[in-house]
Length: 119
Image 1 (cartoon, rainbow, N blue to C red):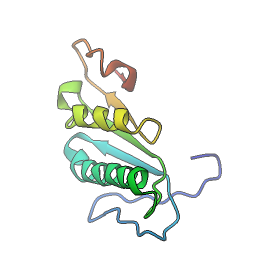
Image 2 (tube, rainbow, N blue to C red):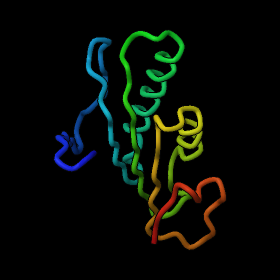
Image 3 (cartoon, one colour):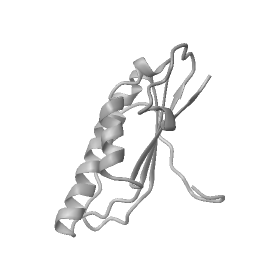
Image 4 (tube, rainbow, N blue to C red):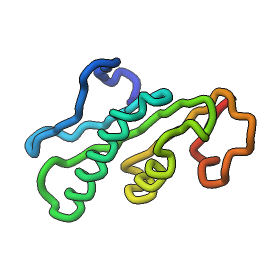
């Protein structure tokens, strides 16, 4: 978002992302902590499908970028981290993630290091 951007926030409850072919593209920011990643990971997989469909067919909903911010105590508690890294690699610049750890005591693996902040 840029200064003065309009944003919509939704915390908890039932939520989903189901754009229709004629809808305007949106940029999404997804924020998760701990096991709260579960519904957002599902949304992230749907976004990857939309990007893949868009690249393959060139029609349908045109997906904007998505940024995921995901926090946990340490990298071992970051659920789906390998899948998320795979999505970032498959859709560079379209799907990005920043992991944040609050109580990391061990070395962070090299693959995750560029994407992790913490302590």
